[in-house]
Length: 91
Image 1 (cartoon, helix red, strand yellow):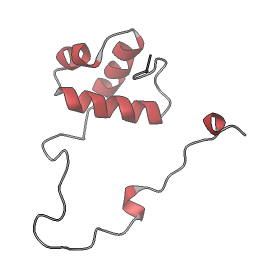
Image 2: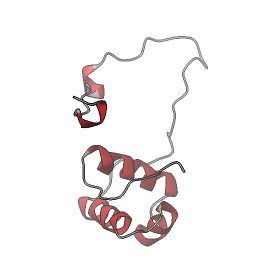
Image 3: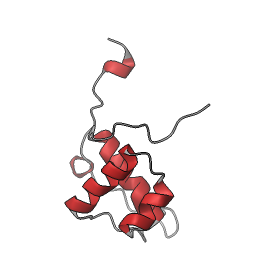
Image 4: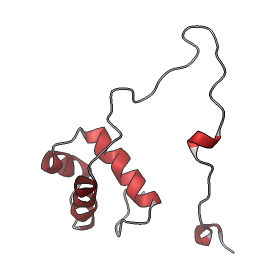
């Protein structure tokens, strides 16, 4: 089976052990200023706008969410198979 046809499987983050404690400054908490919870209605709106051709920056203004949160939402929607358009492509 080609790699593109295989279903992407991964463990849930909660299935993995917590990171081992190290000295101060060893770990960096990435994206700590972002809100990862979103209303289902707003997530559906992001999917609809994306599928209609809007760009992430335009979507962030429409749904009044921080631009990086829209990018995270699009990645979530893509992994769920709810997007009809690609998020990005390389020419």
